[in-house]
Length: 314
Image (cartoon, rainbow, N blue to C red; front, side):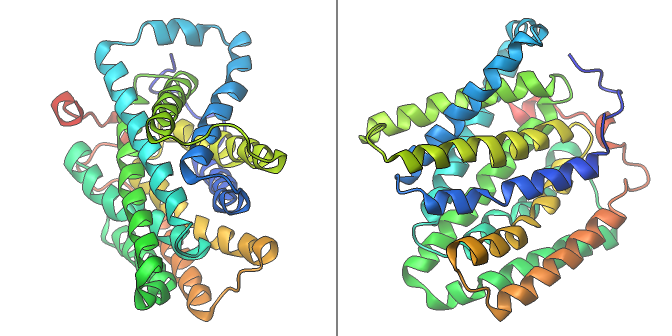
């Protein structure tokens, strides 16, 4: 088990940046796959677990740590996996109805919910300039997605699904913020990804989705989703959340739409509109402002010292 007071091997903000770059590829791989959204989500997590298992040979202590999990930690890990599964199902489905840029923007509106959740569960408060940066970035997100809100119809339905995906992934991060103070990143990631995989497979079987018969290219995209946005993205976030809270990680992820829009332009041929350019610049300015002034408010303990009442998370 990790020492709660240990120093990170690499600067947390640099790790956050690397994770954001990795998750920017997610929507692109989903768009390139021809499989149904639930199947894409399922194999993304199943492949992630399979790619993680070999590392147990070099870190057998993780198995001991997992065996020592309390009943409460198992329940919270299962709940975390349920929220992550819901996030992927909602977001991937939204990509069938709206653009990559708008879907990614709305699903990354996590700070809006992270600010509230962090305050209620952990007593976290933000300095005025940091809060202003967060609100500015959120405004930039709505600038990008405004065209879809005006269109309405199926694009609007896709936007709603993406927004619900933002709610569920924020719940996932908040639970992780608590558990990671008592559990190593490797153990937590392996347990949660395994739980998410089981829930997604069950979902597919109940609803009658085919788990085989997809073209070879789809299996390649499943593998890419597991390797890049999951193991090199979400797993980095699971590691760094020990030192950076949910609000900070959510703010960093707001940079994802910028990277995704650039990739969508070169790979999918999606045109980057003027509102998307303007919104992207506003997001970057807001993220910088938040990260620059995101320091503990006087009288509030740093993240690693914050505890939360078990009743609030159970």
